[in-house]
Length: 247
Image (cartoon, rainbow, N blue to C red; front, side, top):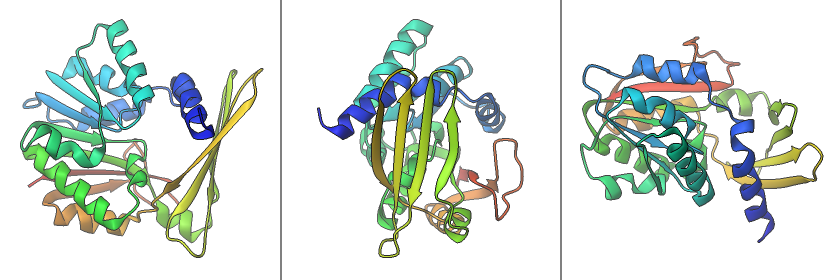
């Protein structure tokens, strides 16, 4: 097992301690979903599935995908323990249209800055087109990213520390004048055990590019927020939440 595999194995093991289910996120999504007509939901980049499982009592059919096998295996274990009927699949987010076909879902969510793992504008545009295609007309799409206008413009090189009684999770950005991408470096320390580090590249997609790509994909009614409390997106907002409707 190489260092990267070791890191993600450790991350999946402690993912729910690092990123426990956010009730504000859950309430935001429930507020946005059209309950009177919602029968199917796609969760893109579901991690260990906590949100998909929490939403499942409100939706007839929930499908959740993630690229990492270990995350999906953990999600399936939790799904069985909860007695939920969420369908979890290991799948690349760019393959959703090929896998599910057109007009399959009433709503889709892509949270946790999953979108930053698409490293080219072409892939960003392809993803939004695919998201539009898998939704029915009028289907709701909710996206969570980061406000890279703030991160790039103000030289932000770290995200807030996550620490509790058992884990310490450090997240840093390494800016490179010769690349449009950011190196995302992480270090997970489990108390009483050794640390494990990992890194990957992030695409710092600015709100303006999100707006143009989402609009070109055929979405309407686009709104941007600075948090799940529906606060305004300000120049120094770190979170970026987007809602829109498939036209």
